[in-house]
Amino acid sequence: MKTFKIASIPGDGIGKEVVPAANKVLKTIADIHGGIQFNFTDFPWSCEHYLEHGEMMPEDALERLQNFDSIFLGAVGNLKLVPDHISLWGMLIKIRREFEQVINIRPAKVLKGIRSPLLNPKDFDLIVVRENSEGEYSSVGGNIYKGEDEIAIQNAIFSRKATERAMRFAFELASKRKKHVTSATKSNGIYYSMPFWDSVFEDVSKDYSEIQTDSQHIDALAAFFVTRPHQFDVIVASNLFGDILTDLGAGIMGSVGVAPAANINVNGKYPSMFEPVHGSAPDIVGKGIANPIGQIWTAKMMLDHFGEEELGSVLLDVVESVTNDSILTPDVGGNYTTEEVTNEIIKRLKIVE
Ligand code: ATP
Ligand code: MG
Image 1: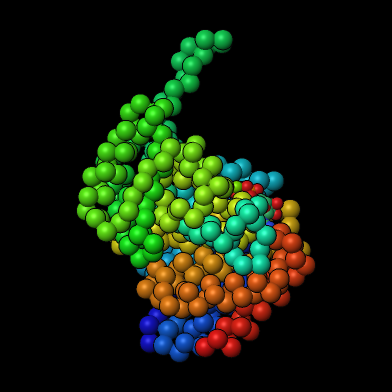
Image 2: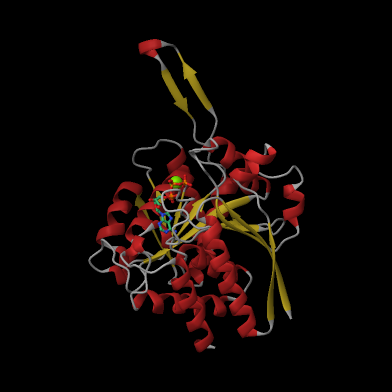
């Protein structure tokens, strides 16, 4: 029996609705499979926890999380009660940094039965690998002068180590897919970092002769997401470019509620964290209509990470059969509830095996 220890953190808002739904799906998979088991430990760390205890999570939180095989997170944030810098820095960013989750992966694909703004949604099936530790999101810089002469200077940090690490990750991923990596660059406008990015890409690509490569400027690349989606397989991008591209991807997927994501620790020292793209969605909380698919697809990514790729693809196929039959929550044009969509997925999983 293979056992995977999962730290389950529903967090805030609809996180508390979609994480239990996804955990139920995972339990069903384990029951059917027989040879695998998921041991969930629930942690109530959230904005509510902050209001009660003055901290998003206890001081020994990281020690407690360290020995899990993965962290399965819903969403964190409740702007009405706790400012973002406290909820994000007190938990999400702390975990990502301390556990060296240096790569963010976001698959983007239009599931059958979900309307997309694209004319040929079938063609849209790609993965963005985003460098998650440095780049444009740096605190190096400052403000000089005052008044009308004031100038803000923002430095971007690109190290060979982190750049190469993200690129190698992308190439490895592509070798299991359509064997194509696109580099998101802007070396025609950004003077130092992007030419460096290009040269590292060229170096790394020499180690992967079986993988096709191309390099696109980020502005054109964004347009090609819409006009030529079939040409993409894996895209490697800096922190900022990856952030923007993946939101574009979620938009093309029809709703942020279906978009999955993972923060990966690549050196194997710490657990990785699986967390959908969407936030706590305070506008729909408590209504029972949150789309559980983003969280369930995120669970599929966790299965892949555990080496259970076959189970992962069965799960995604079942999810797609449900969307294809228009069993959908309101964000993607249906009128089913979180529970109904989840139960339908569970019912069909039982039939497949
Ligand atoms: P955060 O700062 O936590 O990212 P946000 O306000 O930027 O929050 P979301 O919480 O993702 O972003 O919400 C954006 C919109 O998408 C809201 O209208 C929300 O209701 C909707 N939404 C997000 N997730 C889902 C979901 N799983 N199902 C249905 N609608 C969703
Ligand atoms: Mg947001």
